[in-house]
Length: 163
Image 1 (cartoon, rainbow, N blue to C red):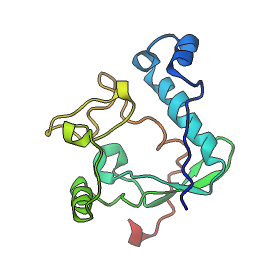
Image 2 (cartoon, rainbow, N blue to C red):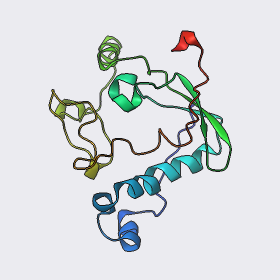
Image 3 (cartoon, rainbow, N blue to C red):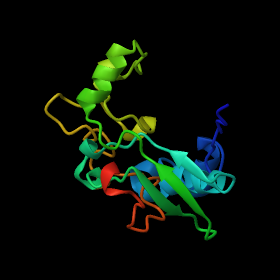
C-alpha cells in the first residue's frame, strides 16, 4: 500500500499568499515562492517517514549529474530521511522506451513540449533543441525549486556498484 500525501503551500490558496506577500510572488521572488509552496510542505510531511523516492535522472541537467541512487537528506528538525532515486542512471530515452514497452500512460503536456513540469506560471514548453529543464523559471538563473537540494550532506551512501 502506497501512502500518498496531498501537500499544500504554507499559506493556503494563491489569494491568501497574494494577501500576505503581494501579487505574483513567483515573478518577484521565485525562490521564496518555491520555499513556502514546495520545500517547507515537503519537509514537514517527511517528518512522518524514514525515506522517500524521486524520479531525478542524472541526464536532466548538469546540477543533477551526480545524483546518487540513495542519499541521506537532513530535515530542519535534525531528523534524517533516506532519499532513493531509482531512475538516476536512466536517460530520457530509457524512460521513453520503458514507457512504450510497458504501455504506460504519459502526461498529456509531454506531447505539447513540456518535458519538465512544475508550477503553472513557472513552466513553459521547450523546443527539441533545448535542455529538458530550459522551460523552468524563464528569465531567472534558477534551475531547481529546492526540494531536491535541501539537507544534502554530500555523501550519498551508495556502493560503487550502484553508481
